[in-house]
Image 1 (cartoon, one colour):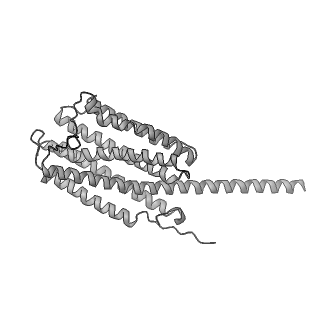
Image 2 (tube, helix red, strand yellow):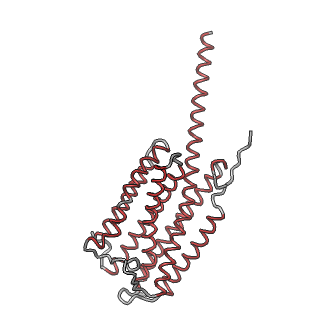
Image 3 (cartoon, chains in turn red, brown):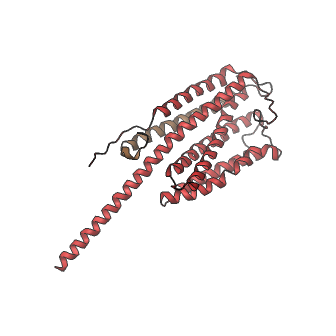
Length: 257
Length: 44
């Protein structure tokens, strides 16, 4: 029988590279966002919040889309590989945290520009609703049952929940909103932004996306190990129960003799 | 810089949360990796 090996390592060369790239990008966001970029004509220094607020919102959207795609892959694949389910779960976990950070940074930015931390504005309200939906998704993942049951019920919820993203994104166009409309992805191709501001924003989007990729890669490995531990513990419990039954049967036979 | 407190709060909280998440993930990963056999870790 071959001896089992236990390597206390979760990182790989790929994740290390992604981590290093995200660190460099994040350093640029801090330096560029706080020092290099100029003030905005209308908002002054408050615009510096944009370099964090927009990338976190982008990552939250991306995370929930990845959750939906991985969930669809799990449902549609013949083998129902649990890897898809773990990517979906890991991505949703990261997305919830980034969505919460988006709301927090937006709230502080709103206090400066609108004079209030919170307003029941269409963009803010739909974003809060999106956050609550995915907290519910994570709660459903935490319910008991087999891995298959967890994957199936959470996949269905993920495919329904992702439909909220267009509602959040286009809420500023569909209703009267305090929140400004898209500055970069406006559709007409006219980007009204200084070069260094746009560069810092794009590097921020890339850096936060790299961070998201690193987190999802590591989180899904953690989930894989948690699932493996759960299965090992279940196997051990079943073996123990089988041994108990065997001992009881032997005792009964001995008693009959 | 105007509104320094708000800007510092946004940057501080965002990067602190990300750092905490990264550290928690790494520690949790290391702890589990020492208990789970390599055959259940396709990346090793």
